[in-house]
Amino acid sequence: METGQPSRTAYSAARYRAAHQLLEHGAIFQDPFAVRISGTESSELLADAPRRGMRLFIAARHRFAEDALATAVRRGVRQVVVLGAGLDTFGYRNPFDDVRVIEVDHPDTQAWKRERLRAAGIEIPSSVSYLGVDFEKESLADRLSLTGPSFFIWLGVVPYLTLEGFLATLTAISEISGNEVVFDYAQAPASMPDARRAALEERAARVARIGEPWLTYFEPEEIAGLLVERGFGEIEDLGPAQLAARFFDRHDVPPHTPGGHILRAVRA
Image (cartoon, rainbow, N blue to C red; front, side, top):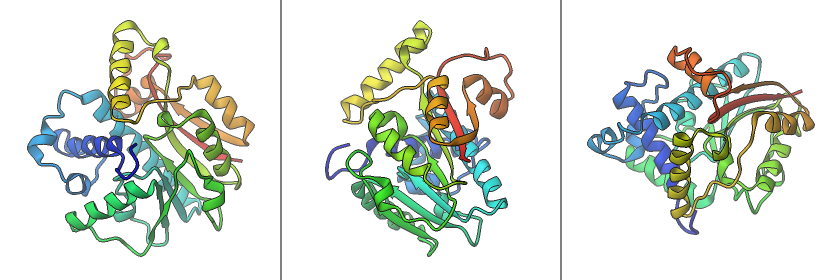
């Protein structure tokens, strides 16, 4: 992202979340603030209809994360850290009275978000706080102070980090036993069939042109190894086939189909 400007990919993700509320009526993931905080007219959001695959993947990753969070709260977790929060709205519709939410993002994106909240008339609860961090230049471990096990929502961020930036943040998350994290990652275009690879490369080129290139890809075995090295267990990794079965009742996708993954892991 450009200095002094909010993340354009954060805005794009917000549009997809909002469009899902209109086009699929929030069938996968319901967010009553999504349209308002996007600041986008309904007619424009409906124009996103052809990008159904990306829209539903984004809806599924939020549903997966918030389902896992609800389970974590039931077992006693009382802190949620939203890394690369963008226009995420969980903190403003948080159903758990005693759960604290910390949003971590680049200061420029946070300033833009607070403007969007004001414009949309969305109140900032006392349970929400903000921490400005540049993941490539600052250490999350040095900036974030937690009082116990926490749940980390880290969506739409990992592909835009260098490997070093990703590992530094993952290591910081691993420092407290009981911490849980949900993040998404992408497999390399080279692993895709020709048509899928071409579409992925075109999207990668598009985000690179706006100054937010994809930098890091992983294969499932590789990411599992990095997690185990840092003490994570109970790893749940859903690729295209598993996502299709769980959220869309589709069981025809071959088990090892490459693509975007959503992963949950708990620090033992």
